[in-house]
Length: 150
View (cartoon, rainbow, N blue to C red):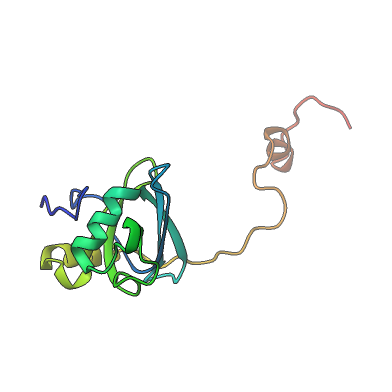
């Protein structure tokens, strides 16, 4: 427990995601950025909101070749194509990440255990007609008069 990710960390009790980094889009002026990740289970492309400077420093520390000329982000840096585990904040921003090759066994087990004991979703047929019968109709069906004349 208490496994921390690069620059921001998370507690292992939170939901952990896994994906492949596709790119990074950010602005040092606003301080806002998005790490573009392809989810390893669904294949969905996600844009993870994050702090620009902190994420760039974390990518540099984890993979190198991230900070380019003029202190800008190298769009084809060593981080592109790398697999990571990551966690999200309650407000929707990325809490932090951990390269898969550096992940502890406990982190890998936590990620995998999220998908165990979950029954597959089944598609049920929708019933035809009304879902809820009115009290008056239910009583009439049973032959009980409600005092209303037809």
